[in-house]
Image (cartoon, rainbow, N blue to C red; front, side, top):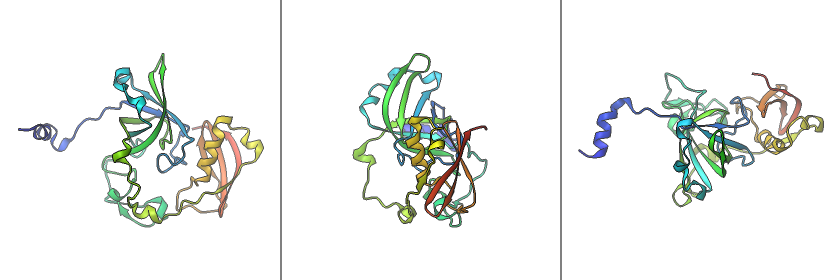
Length: 242
């Protein structure tokens, strides 16, 4: 019997046990406001810290030769015992159903995410071992990562590919009004990525109340704002408390 047959016999319908190899650390302590896709906001920085068992430099030999990486991770805040064959994508206003496998919804039979991120550098940390510094991640702080693979442009890039319903969705940017006295409460190096997150409209697609005040938790701050038509106005910045 070949290897595939052996694997099927051993695993069967029970599948396999996946191990968390690392966790990503970002400026998002909650789900709200996280970009819906990776690489949309390149200024967002993150660190990937390996679990103690996998802090082995040899396992990363040659990784520095790549520009982008694929991350396979868990929607750890969306784990459920049940699943639905259809979901309501927020970008379609939350009232149109699509097949779960025709979307990237977190509510899946297996709550796995797939993201491409840019590898900026590999740091050798005395306490944490090799740490990957990446940009463009679309994950919450502490998200478990199951695997890391190199992005191969000659097979992974398909510019001519159809994008399904996403080809018909508008991704217009909002104008951000951020009063100077409030902007000064944000660390200088975090201001550009925060403004880009806000301009990308962090609201769910079905929420459009101009009187509603939203709160975006980012880099230790709770950034509160309103949106009227295509203008987002920041009205308060306070320390974030869970």
